[in-house]
Figure 1 (cartoon, rainbow, N blue to C red):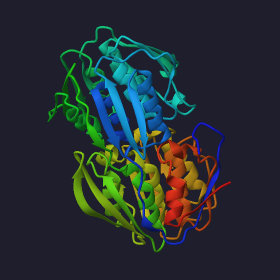
Figure 2: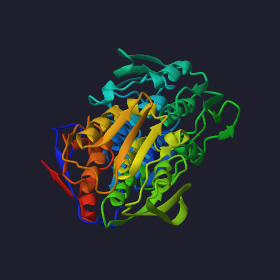
Figure 3: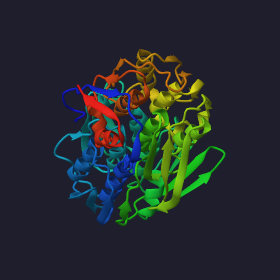
Length: 448
């Protein structure tokens, strides 16, 4: 499947018990950052377990366009021969980031303080998403931007020839904005400071420290303050990418709502800034356990065991948990529809500006399958119908959003009637083996 080609309708049918081991792909966030920081180091960075989805492959192509040598050895093993901080060459072509908001925003950051001019574009979904949240702070470094109305792609950025370090308070919780500013700060003299009022995923901070950057994190009255000293010489690393918790969410949630299921999902990254979904599911009464807790590559990791859970209750998800599970709310809303009682999700305005307006997309699809949903600008609620209570039978729009498509495929596994999405092709952007992995567990998926 391809997120850039002909739409591929997909249908998910009620499944027999799901069982087995679900070996999900590498973490998307860490995969992007491994390639980018590898390109900004001097020497060879070796990466294993890289997610080879469309989003990450587009980032690999971009790093090649900037002059780094990127080698695919097969089986998720890659090498990046970096050009050093400030060593990026000006690309001779437009940088196409496909569907990836993470990719384009991080790449904008890493080039904004080099004296090069770069034009960015993407697919129709990415070209409709706002970029001002990144380009505004990059302008403080001295970068100049020309884009479409509303700060949208295609967009050209002229990097700062003489960048100045900045002190920036992130206005909304966003790891992408924070990371873009930190990456820009690498090639600015002095100290760049980023302050976030709510902690977001901290992969950038961890990886920058691992590559040898001087970076400190402190809790202050203003919030979480990250200070980066610019113009370091980054040292190449050997990186083992943990498996993606956002991808793990789908087999885990499918097991919870499909009668008789017992699924093991090994080697999942449990970075505290990413694991909010799993704690929320436990709060709802899910039979979900962490086994073999360990640390790999500086990240906490565990094997997740998920079993069918008929006694789940709706809850009010703590709003301060939103940043740690922002990508998982769509599939959480599916689980909520199989719980008893109302699940309230608040403080989630960020969902409105993802690959799609995810609150609107999920509300439409859930209603099409017999579920009652209420929504506001930064909240929504799902009225659970209990185990085996979701009628299904609806057709949902995916809106070129991989997580919307996969969430409704999960719904179909436990619903009374099949659930269809109009286009499952975007799934390859983050989870290229979703279909064979799920059918290997016992799911019944078909391409129409």
